[in-house]
Image (cartoon, rainbow, N blue to C red; front, side, top):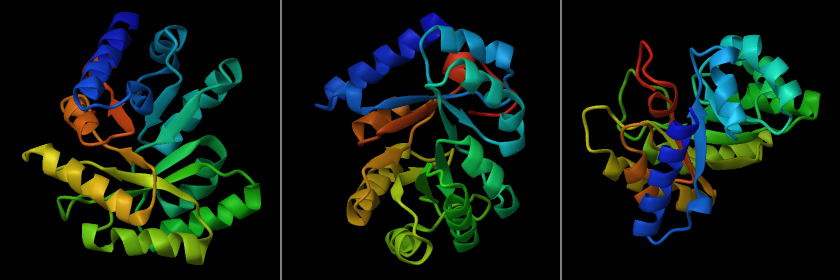
Length: 221
């Protein structure tokens, strides 16, 4: 585990230097979905503190105890959020990367106001406009960020995308970077195990890596 993390960090560093960037500006989000607390612990012991989970219910089963033991954990929700899970998501996650429609924005705004807890929020953009995939269409992303701020009182920290699996990811990452600039948000969460170096070259501030750290699972990370 420690070797895997070191290898990924070294690759991030090389990609950043090649792009003329400081690697300190790229956060590694270790995607721990489907793995239990015992499998996550070696990553924590190796110094990793930022993790990503796909499902609220799964995260609730393993992370509260780990957060008590390692209070500096930063937990990201990187999977779809249902409005009826907004309460639990706001209570548990430090970053929610998948704000993708008005109903979710409204539910999060209400829970943030109620709980007084303010997780960082990212808008998910469907850069490939794939009908089966969540996310705001690119042409609507900047206006949606503005509505999240003005109508729901949300502080939007950045944008997130998952490019189509069968396409060159670079244009999608470049598009997300351009939209983030237009929206005036600093974070760009993009890049996974197979393409995070390309994402770093295109301005990623967060890369979401699972398989290359934890090993393969039943579905891609």
